[in-house]
Amino acid sequence: MSFLEVKNLSFEYIENNLVLDDLSFNIEKGTYTCIIGLNGSGKSTLAKLMAGLLEAKKGEIIIDGLKINEENIFEIRKKLGIVFQNPDNQFIGSTVRDDIAFGLENKRVPSNEMEDIINKYADRVGLKEFLDKEPTALSGGQKQRVAIAGVMAMKPEILIFDEATSMLDPKGKKDIKDLINSLHDSGKFTIISITHDIEEVLHCDNCLVLNKGKIFKYCKASEVFNNPEELRKIDLDIPFNLKVVEAFKKNNIKLKHKDLKGMAKELWQSNSNH
Image (tube, rainbow, N blue to C red):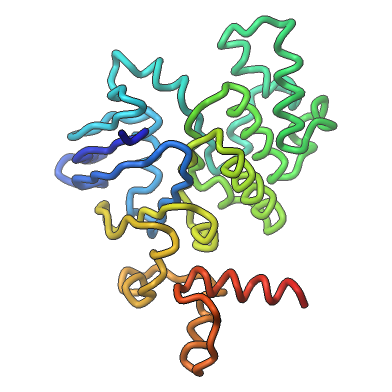
């Protein structure tokens, strides 16, 4: 059975103006899924529905056998954590330590256990030496890592990243993407990333493409770019590496891999060795 099931899900902010229209898909436990689409396609709305922050107009979302509703919402929220796009809006404590501790205090974790938990997850995101720093002293990427540490300290099974790199500079984006990849490699989390960063899809397991509130495509990440023209018809671009691969193919320059994702990785590895 799927760990997260979405069945015939619809949602509207304004009556008779559907933002999401009859979505159905499943996500398996331990996988890394990217959700992509243009602005207005419904990506962030879907994230909020999966986190139980909005109520569906029609359909249902089931997480680990529990339907999201008033009866189950508190149990479900123990299973997931969400990281939003603006790290400045996520700080509650006056220091990094206080911020990571906030959720633990609400969970009534004994104070004699809290310090070890804080140190563990601050170290996990590479910020243990910043525990007594004020949030204003951190870069955007560091703030986002603190937000991730705070979520991880709650020990969720599902991590939802809602445009978590969109407001960061290139270094901050790389740091967060590397961290997401390492969390996936640990095998401890089911990761869902709502993203504008098309390059991120090259690192996930599955990709859900939304277009005007509907599912345009849901497939393995290795397959999503196999027909670039299909994506261009809905105004989505493809990663730069794949554009180079396309140029290679047009000029009859052969690469070992048959699929575009594999070719892109081969090209990237080749470039990294020079």
